[in-house]
Length: 242
Image (tube, rainbow, N blue to C red; front, top):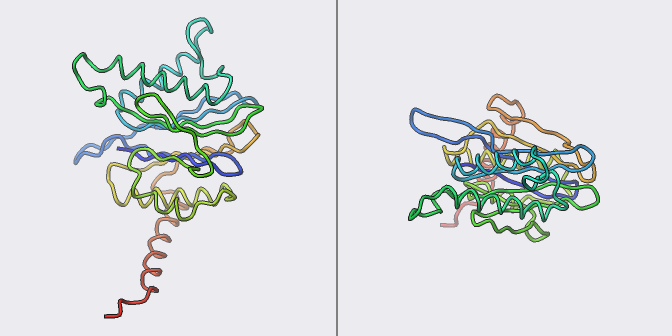
């Protein structure tokens, strides 16, 4: 399991993903689930992945290989004319990988994977999409300003209650860390370290990209502070009038 979030604010796009791919009793492994393609000053594209690890690796590897191939060999994620066309390219690649992975007579959903795709190209707005295993996708809007994939239920309440499109990057980082901390404490299949990336609007470059481990002082402060705040909030509520 995994947990990834892509969130759209007025200042740009914010992404965060965990790195755990296995959480057995005596075997814990990690793998980066955030991939970035960029041409500074022209485009930045970010892809978050969840689901079957072989499928997600194959999708990312194909997209990356084709970005380095000659134009006559395959479409390149670095040459798509819009973020919409980029989402179509990723969706088509997902369908291609899954259809080639499932043996005849075996259910293709065993190889399923979902993705969050976001970025901005020069001359257009920042855009954010969620891509399903079937290859179709939806786009973020004012009514749906963020997407989650993987283990979503534990971290969603704080996003729904506290999200504000006018948040700064610093406030958004705090919001996402609370969301991830809630998920980490509830499900061992989601784990540190976390990858975080800020894409500032109309800069066509990465504002900040950082890996956050368990020894990160700010993450520890947020984790401990949120636990204390919840306990204090609970105690401040009136008792049941029995």
